[in-house]
Length: 270
Image 1 (spheres, rainbow, N blue to C red):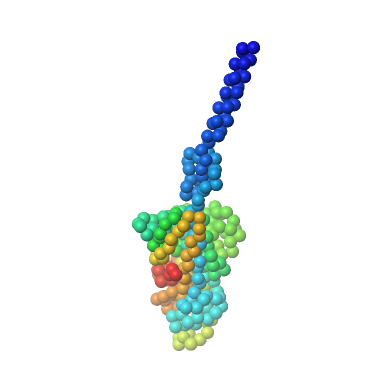
Image 2 (image 1 turned 45 degrees about the vertical axis):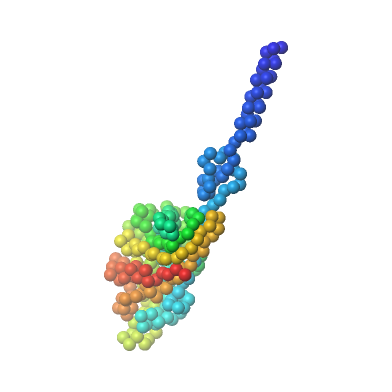
C-alpha cells in the first residue's frame, strides 16, 4: 500500500510540475520579421510590430507633360516619340536624418510606364529620413553572376511571366536603361518623327547611383509613399538625335555613357 501511495504522489507532483512549467512560458513577439522580436518568448502574444513598408510611385514625364507612347514631343529641337522605355533599379539605401544609412538588400525593380507603384519587399525602421539612393541598373553581384533563370516567375529579373524583361543573353547582363522610338532627322529639324532610335545601355561599368533628397518620417506598421518624377527627355541631354540615335552599348560606348550619366538629371523626388 505504501508503494502505491508513493507512486501516486510522485505522478501527481510530476503532472503539477509540468503544468507550472507550461504556465510559465514567456509570452511576447515570436516573429523574427518584427521590430520587437523577443528571442526568449515561447508563445506569441499578438504584440508584434512590423517595420514601415515603402511604396515608390514613379511619375513618367517628358518635360512638363505626362509620357504617352506614340505622341510627338519636342526634344532637343526635334519631334520625338517614344514606343518603349524602361529601366532597372536596385541597391536601395535610405539616409537617416540623424546620420547613418539603412540598406535594403535583394530589392530589384523594373520600372516602365505600364506600372506606377512598386512596393519594396523589405521595410525600413521607424524614424526620420533625409533621402535615399538607388542604382540605375542591376548591381554587379547579380548582373553578370546570376542567370535570369535563377529568379522565380514574375520577378523583375526573371524572363518568365515578365514581358518587359531585358537581358542581353551573355556576360554583359541586363539592359539597365532602354529607350526606343522615332525622331525627326531632317537637316532643318522640321520634318516628322520617322527615323527609329534605339538606346540600350548596360554592363557593370555603366552602373550609376541616383541620389534623391527627400525628407520623410517612417512609422512602424505604416506605409511610406515616396514619389519620383522620371523625365525621359533628360536621358537625351547633350545628344544630337539626328546623328546619335542608336547604341547597344558595345557598338557605341560613348553614347551609352551619355545616356546613363544623364540619370542624375532624369530623376527628382517630390
